Figure 1 (tube, each protein chain N blue to C red):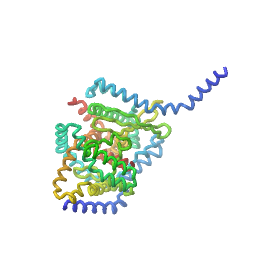
Figure 2: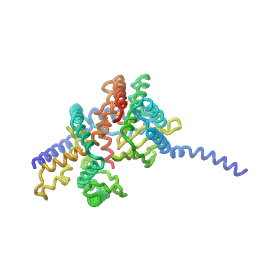
Figure 3: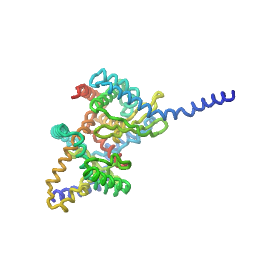
Length: 263
Length: 205
């Protein structure tokens, strides 16, 4: 209960920052530097005309703080998450790990359904519903993602509240590196605080008397550990080939979210 | 007689009008052929922790990647801030980094099947080839942007799950140039290549 109240407070605070801050934060030094880089590269060189395609606006007024959190996260991943991930991977056969991942993904179905609908993507909401029923029944509580083999239900882009806000025209706002969780923006942080209210965990306590927050935390921990090998692999892949891992990660986050919001 | 003249005419017209279309048909083909060659190296049991096997990989990769082109695009307007010597060094270090990254992925990645999905035009001489790399653990959407260099289709950008490799490096290089200047940029890059070379040369468990 207290945790829910805390989340709500945080949600409201961040929303306020987003609304108040979006006006003034969109034009900081870095953005205008990029603007001039862009116009310079587009002006003269016809050869590079398609730079426009992958231009992504980045706002990072909190860079010094973000870099500090980034360095902290890097150590936390190296010292804590990586050993857990590689240990877990050793003792868990890949199909089992995939099955557990599928189960948690299926469970979060209401988030994707509601956000598809909020974005007016009713066809996608229908696909999500179809996926949920097939995977929950034929796929045994979601452990087997049978929908992947069904035309029209495979590769449905996943929707969340951050994307919904984006579709509604809310700007990203400043870039944020959140302790442990990593890259985000103010908009996406608001989204990831709002989304859990749609998750089955949030309403199980009303229908199941014995539901305790300990059960929710245990389930979330299992999900995190189960995902950790993939998270670490993706993190290392970017980090190892970057001249400046902080900038590389930031750019990758903005590019990837832009694509997800557009899909 | 009459037919022979017609035929000759036809050949000329086809050559004139069909040339761009012939390219269009071959961006995907060129890519598929080149990737198959690389996969052949892996299936022959080449081990890219070995420098001499990496040299073979480099030779294959240079058939369809243009290091100069990618390097220039990655630096964009920063290109002019480098002296000619620095430009040469930048190209060689950057292409070395790309080869090492590719080698590392091949060493770690195991088998992944590539599905060639579609080819979209991006202006007259550019194409975007959509592929999907499928492995045991899942699938990745990879787009190859290609352009014609010296009459051949060459890759100038790779976009993995919506993240463009070239613009990702561009954001890093722009920031490094601003903070440390051309010398700092070249130094950071060559340090990274050195570090990467060591880690790639470690035999896989």
